[in-house]
Image 1 (cartoon, helix red, strand yellow):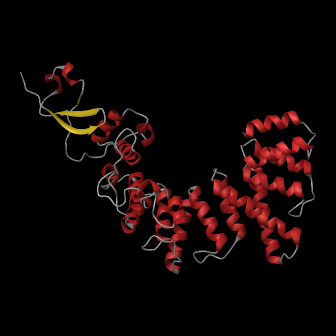
Image 2 (image 1 turned 135 degrees about the horizontal axis):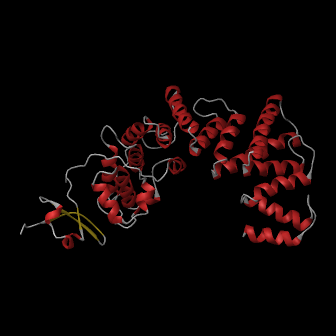
Image 3 (image 1 turned 90 degrees about the vertical axis):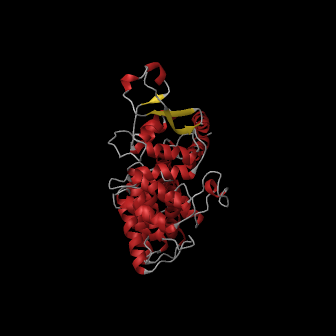
Length: 368
């Protein structure tokens, strides 16, 4: 009888994959293969076409993901990298995550999502917005073991390598990576936010714009912030800032929604307290037009602004508590917390709507 020797190639908790080498499958007793997978090359496999996504594989049994990853399925390799990065079903190991990402990222047909994930590992952050907020790459997720050589397999911070991998994915059109190029270039060698030179600033804006046009809300918010603060040699332009905030807010970007609300409500106060110049009045008009359009298209934060405007008679419109309530109600139905509280108070006090404490109680229950 032909002697078959399984070869162990991977060990994860409760899962051992053995490869049968040097035989035809038909020559083996089927019962002995219950924990064995079919023969494959132990060298780095070639990428294979797939219709799977990393999310599909993340929901599957870990063993199935491991099998597909070793067979060269790039999406499975990314999913396995994600597992090691997050410690889902396996011991958290960033070096192992890097290894699986690289299998999918390298070569002529390198997977852009894997390339992007490698860039994030080199920044030691979970998201680009987190990276910007911290002004450096210190992340609670990754920094606990930053001075150790073992543990979860720490990846040293490397701005140059992060930019290199982001650029590979950006050139393939991945919006997140395009924004990644902009974010890395927005920092210096010590990962601090800097004032770039004109040429670098132009590149930052260019990559951000590519990403924002594709609809990435983080890039849209970033461009809004650049226009609002006059950064990267862009002139301060509140109207353009509002346009980008509206685009991001429409996709549920929380900070853009809050920025839009405070931004517009601040501008609407100009006409209330006087002192507005011709330019500021023109800006207010442009911002108001943008907010009206956004509110009509169902963006909750813009509807809140409209509610405030009509409730208090701001922004050059006559006070109309009924219209103010209507706009607040539209946003409240979308889960806008401030508007839900406004609706509760309106029903409690009969402001803009007949008093109805029963409905007020219903909204109180929804809000809490």
